[in-house]
Image (cartoon, rainbow, N blue to C red; front, side):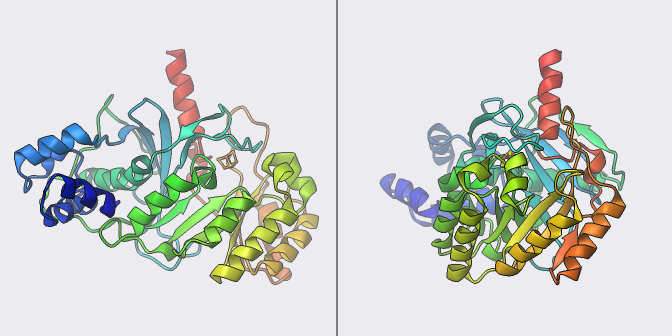
Length: 378
Ligand code: SF4
């Protein structure tokens, strides 16, 4: 944070403008090494390098290309792997209309919540991401685009494998590139609100004018239903958007696929969401992954519509992306469309994600799982 850096610089008897210089290098020019901060004296650069690590995420693998969903698999300093997903501009999904892109960000290595349909939790939870690892995903994707995007074509099947241990290079230009990403959805690997403190600190940095400069209203935090943390978030001064990974509108359905529901059932979750809305006056989004034979029956639309009306929420329907080794499948397009139509008949604002990511290990956590298993075999 700015005040922490300012306190450190003050203790080193450095002038205040040095703080702004460093923040500019970090957040505007998005450099990957202290040595690249060329307007700082060399002794200060060495001092910073000795005191703070500036580890950048290393690209292991990338799938998709500039006109489609692009998935990045990153290696962290301790060798753990996480995913970030860059989603083409689509005002219907989150936030307001935008010609920029949305990045789906991870918050944990693995996940402890064990939703039955999800690849992220299959190998369990390893650790929370640190603040710089959350912020670093945005920087790394933007750096990648600044150096590589011109070479990209519209080929959706493109896959890039990073050179082993190659950090994403910093842009060569002395001028900061315009911000590529101006919408964030915090719904990658992990349960975001289980890493509450690091996440909120990272989002303050990404929101701050001296940091990422991304509006709080363009940042959507998703949760599988951690009711106490939703109530805590309601007290936060920043106006982040909230999405609930619902995937079932009755306890019976949610209990089958989301163990978190046994801890915080729908009544508890709904009450926390109402508390959030009373304090924030923000529209909530209900995420609903359509899984064949599990939650796609038309009878499910009635309780879902009732919940959406009670919370004044809109519903995002997401056809299930197949995960290797799991038995679940996505419903046919006819079933998806019928589910959407039934919701609309109940006067619910709903969208159906007709995404292109199905062919590129699009399920959250799938690319990491596949890569880790390939590495273990070789
Ligand atoms: S859906 Fe979210 S909360 Fe559930 S296991 Fe996957 S990452 Fe964790």
